[in-house]
Structures are given as C-alpha cells and as structure tokens.
Length: 534
Image (cartoon, rainbow, N blue to C red; front, top):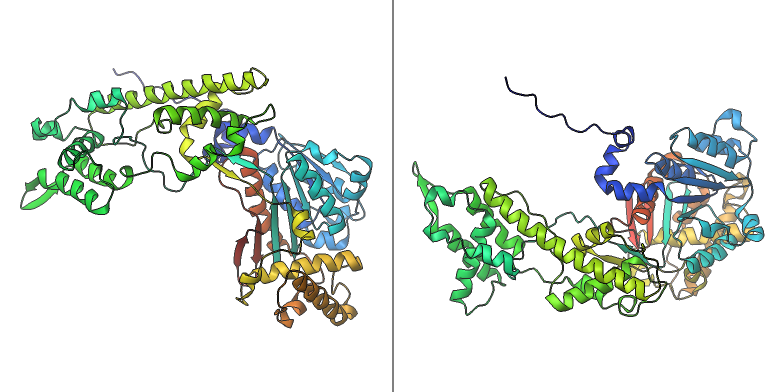
C-alpha cells in the first residue's frame, strides 16, 4: 500500500488573512507595511476612504488629525460617519469606525486642527512614514509641505469636489528595488557566460545527438550552440540586428524540422530556443536607467547618512566595474527538458547568483563600516533581494508642493493648447484653493452666491494664468460647473480617487512598484484621468 502524499504546510491565520496581498509584495513588503505609521489630516470622505484601503491590508498604525465636529454634510458623504455621531469629534468618530475593519491595526486621533498641532508641536508630523492631507487650505499646506520636504517624508495631498478629484504626491527622493515589470525577460547571459556555465554548455554538441536525445536538451543549450555557430560565421560578432537574429532562428528551424504525417513540425524545446532569440539576445549588459543610478552622485559620494540603498549601489558599482555586468538573477524559466539537464543548469545559475550576492554583501558591509554606520545596517537577505532585481533599480526625485505653489514658472502652456486636456482642471482646482484661502468658503457654497462667486473665481483663475505666463482660455461653463458643486464631496468619486492614493502609499512604504510622479487628475463625468509632472 502506497504511503499518503505529504500535506502542504499549513498557513498561519495571518497568512490566510493577507494571502492575496502577500502574492503582490511578499512577506518583506508586508512587514514594512505593518511597521509603517500613517497620519491623515482632515476626515473627509476622501481621507477616510484612503485610510480604509490602508487599514484593510494591515497598516501598522494611523493617527487622525481633525478639529471639526461631525455635520449633516459629513454624514451624507462619508460612509464611516453615522447619524448617531452628529456633533461628535470627527476625528474620534472616524477612528472608531476604521478600527472596526482590522483588529491588527492601531489607531489614534487628535481632536485639533493641523494648524494648532503644527503651532504647538513643530515636529509632530515628522514621526510618520507618510502624511495624507485632504481639503487642506493653502496657508497650512505650504508650511507643512516645506517641513516634510526637509524631513524627506512623503506627503499625499488630495481634494475631491463634485465630479472632480486630484492627487499630488510630494517625495524628495524615493528608491525602488522591485519594480515588478509587466514583461520580464529571462536572464540567461548566453552572450557572456561565466566560466562554469561556458564549460558546461561547451560539452553539449547538438549535431551529435539523436532525435530522442535532442528532444530532452534544454532550449538554453540549443540557443547557446547556435550562438556559437553564428559567431564562427561572423568573426565572433553577436547577433544584434533583426536580420542577424532571424539568421539564428533560421539555423535552428532549418536544421531540425521533423516531417510527420505530411506535416512539418519542430520539437518544443527548439521552438522555445527560437523564442529566446528575441527575448534574451541583444539586451544591454547594463540598462541605461541602472547606469544612471550607478553614476549618480549619491552612489559615488557616500556619507554617514547614506541609505542602505545607496551603499548597496556603491558595492554593486564595484562589481560591475570588475565583471562588466550586473549580478545574475539566479532563476530560470520552465523549459521542455529532462529533469537532470534542467536541474544541473538551475544549480549553475543559483550558485553564480549566490557568489555574486555574497561579494556585494561583503563589500556593502565594509563600506557601511567605513562610513561609521552600524554593523546591522545592511542584512544579507536585503542584499540578495537587491542583486536579484539589480536590473530593475529605479529612483524618482520629485518636487516640493510649496515651491510649485509659490513659483510663477509652472510650465503648463503646452498642455493648454488642447482645450480638452485635463490640465484645465488643475488650473481650476488651484483657483479653487486660492478662493478658499481668500474667502474662507467654497465658491457656490450658498445658493444666492453662485453667480457672484463665478466672477470671483474667474478673476482668480485669470490672475493665476497671468502669473504663469499663460493666456486665459478657460471656457466659462467649466468655472460655472465648479461653483455649482458648492464644495460638495461625492462619495463615489472620493472612493475611486482614494483607491488610487492608497496604492501609491503602499508603493512608497514597501519600496515596490513605480510611484506616481507627481499629479493625478480625475474627471468622473467622462471617466478620464491623466498624470502630469509639475
């Protein structure tokens, strides 16, 4: 009687709970999320929806800052505020509702305005991983922006009014190791194999194998054989042009076509080899965006304050200078082959990846020690992940919101040439914020003031455009529309833009995926959205 198959390891309750997101950003990403602290300024519908989408996946802790009381308008637009909360502290009510979503998350609130908090505790907002500000007046936004810019803490600013919404992400510098590209080509290194791989591949002569033996040879070995054959015919040159790659594919196809029952076929492993000609041959040894990072001043001029990312980049730079290429990824795609042949190749790739990662780790720890950093500043696991994704490294440097608001050199004139470009709504929303700062109310908030407010808002927008050196070309109906909203917040619009904001915050916290840079505008009337770098 055969023994039963071994049971798969049982998942912990936590793994079951967060299973879907662990597939996206892994255990290491989840750990960063659980250690993060987020602050929300103003409990608008947008603000609570953003926090909801962070509490559910298990953000470590959040703090709500809001000095307002729950109003009937809040209850009408915010699903987290109920009738029996009318007149309560808005911060307290929202915190209570949000904490019901996930018992793993810690939440706190401060029943004061952001302005009061900044006046009495200057560095309060410096204690968070990310700060979220919704419907924040310019007079508070600008000093907060400057403070967080200096502290290098990400700031997400959002506003939802009527059928319009926007997000603005402020990050001074953000580094990403795991970009998660949509299409990732296998890292085979057949053009420049290291000695152990070359020695193994040189022992396989495809021409001397019978048909049964050939059918079990991994595609990688087949492609290497024909690469060498191509090089022998072209004075050692590699196939870099489309014509040359076609020549390699033709070599593979013409030599091993099999005629069965009147049809011409090719073994599966040979078809795979032909496919890899396009995806794995002719790629740059060092992608241009990675070379820019390795040549960056932050990489070449390290200080005691340098982050582990830049220390690892410095160690990687030395490896690239000595070996001429990035570390091997260490993994192989599935291939049609016999088990022994495939496993042998897999072990060669894994061993080389381990050797290179250990080399980078030793050098990185040595650099960190010379800089006076702590012994555990960089972990071996961190370096392995860094080396595995070395070809994906990404750095984004943003701009300060305060500089954007106080500068007269915002370059949007080229966008404004198209009257339907969504940058129009950026102009309108900037005018809206200036209107709120000047009159302490939303335009059109009172029915009898809609028409007068249209004229005021139009004048403000005209002055803004003049400051930017742009011709006032906005259609009056657009300004009428924003005044008709009266500052009303629609939950469906806020929920949509909040999901986008939460995605960006998770990217920032986990240092995975490329974040927004830097402005996102959403028009729910047409269901169109656009991003702009301002």
